[in-house]
Image (cartoon, rainbow, N blue to C red; front, side):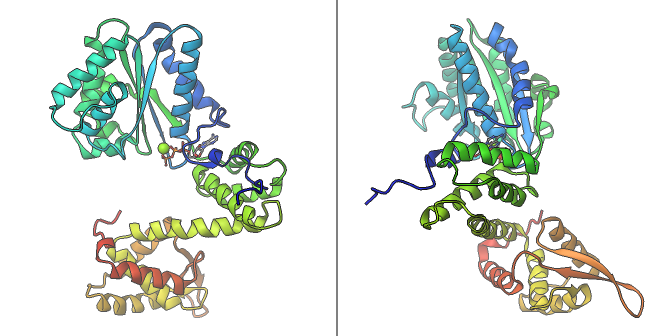
Length: 394
Ligand SMILES: Nc1ncnc2c1ncn2[C@@H]1O[C@H](COP(=O)(O)OP(=O)(O)OP(=O)(O)O)[C@@H](O)[C@H]1O
Ligand SMILES: [Mg+2]
């Protein structure tokens, strides 16, 4: 048992989400901007701030972590000191939770309850002051915190520095997919200048391929994956520009290949990995639809049967029946058309306008990524589960 050496995976930890590679490809510009923004802190202990924004899987979290680790190493080798802490605000989504985690960085046994917010802030300040060095706080997914609680914490943290003694200061790196300036009050905005925003664009196909290549070199046995197969992975990921999706696919494909006897990762292993991940992606997408859109999509899936396309008029006839079945009022044509367009934007549907033989133009709908019968089954399951029918839409 466990004797056989792995034929494909050399170091599985390097395929995990938490792994922070030494070198990040195609994020040199963002690293450079961070360096420029934080130079005053490293040289003179002046507090600095940065806001990192961009869509899913564009490397915001990994870049912030890599940057802080590099900066800490640089300081250590130049006989300077700095300290940093990483907080994911999706997990710690209240001010109370964030402050506790900050204090626990210095005092791991600090209790969950029993102290007021003011007392905790005072305790945090004492810890930072006694460290007598710059302290960098990374608030990842900070939009979750800003939406769920008062905006006071960011302001409090930014004010701390004015009152601090010695060489202590607080610098902030805030990360969010969405812009946060409208979520902050004016006082906090003025402390964290808008000019400090660093943008993370979606990765192109070639960039994704380089990311796959770099990760494969670290994690896989040499020579098990050829260039074309890496290209296929990047090709599948390019619509999203999301490195997480591509690395997840690489990990799944490597595991599939490990289980077969071939000793290489083939294009089919990548396709199977894609199919596994795609089914999750689409399930999440379906869950995010509100009740009205779920009903519209179910009627399209039922009406299309095994055809490639269905006209919008035929889909609407089925829609009326489906709404009745679920005790809902069917919406008018313009509203139905809006639902179709929304779902096209989400890559669930495609539409095409065709000219009819008797004149006039008709919109046809297709479902390219999933067999309609399967889609209908998934939607029926979701509609039968009372908790998944949120009414808020998007
Ligand atoms: N330039 C890169 N080089 C190597 N690996 C990368 C690069 N960019 C992203 N990754 C990897 O892709 C995955 C996703 O990156 P990361 O978690 O930083 O994305 P993100 O922008 O924070 O996404 P989200 O908004 O969903 O939190 C991680 O496993 C990360 O290590
Ligand atoms: Mg992230």
